[in-house]
Image 1 (cartoon, helix red, strand yellow):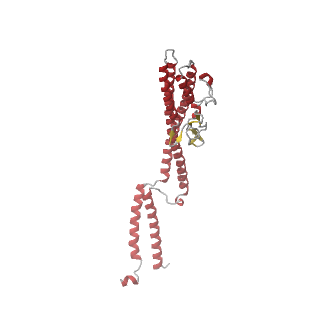
Image 2: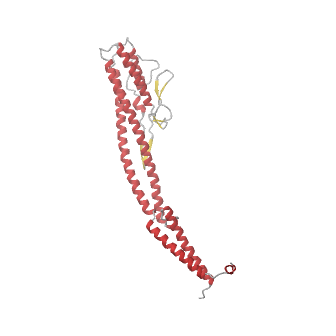
Image 3: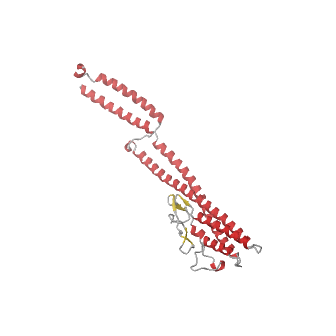
Amino acid sequence: MRITQSMMSRNFMTGLYDITGKMDKTQYQLSTGRQYQLPEDAPMENVQIMTHRSTLVQVNKYMKNTGEIQVWLENSDSALSEVNNVLQRVRELVLQANNSTATTDSKQAIAHEIGELNDHLKNVSNTTIAGRYIFAGTNTDKPPCTKDSNGNWVWQGNNGDINVEIDANATVPMNSKGFDIFVRNDFNWNDLTTPTTPAPEKNLFNMLDALTKELKDPNSTKSLDKFLDVTDQFLDGVNDERSSIGARANRIDFTKSRLEEFHLNITDALSGKEDADMAQVYTNMSMQQNVFRAALSAGSRIIQPSLVDFLR
């Protein structure tokens, strides 16, 4: 077969294109640290890489959700701890006022302190996180504890759960339903004080207002035992909810720990499939540069000078 100048030129250019293509791939690996530039470089491996990436997106979402739940649970527990302390103080004050040795002046002072504590409880019940009321059920955009047109306190929150996904097909309510904490229907206003029309909602704030009113009335001879009983009922509700928060918090801790370990394992698996061996990449680049220079040097000898070269 007769070897012509054009054949040598074509073979030279083919080889040059091949080595520059390899250098382009190696340069990509150097700049990104990844093995594959295009899906067709390794179809099966790229399918696994995309699967791992999709899994990491889901795991990151679950980890973000567990973090948000922890913030809500911690703030809810802190607020309910404050409610518990206030109710314990109210109980102590009621015991003092219920003593036969209590004077009118001392009852007035106790009534004033209970009124201040009640105001504090209203603020606690309207606790917010990022502008969302944590005890309002799903009505997080409105303060749950407000006054009606009759001057009584009403609870506008509902019993809805704010369920957050922490794993595939697994959700956890991150909120505490204030209706179950601050509202009770198992006591009778007639047992506590003279009923009014219309009857106020049976919530903690109206109960404390009624207690304050009884203490301020110098003519009242009613025993405060029923107020103690109702206070204990509210305390039981607070403690029950704090137990629920503790159980959910433990579950979230275990789930978050498992997600972090799973995230690490998937990241390692993704790295094994996707990351380039940088030592090998540097070696390949050095070899390819040498080949490229040798090809150019050989090409300068193979390709004959043209008329333009003589005219320079």
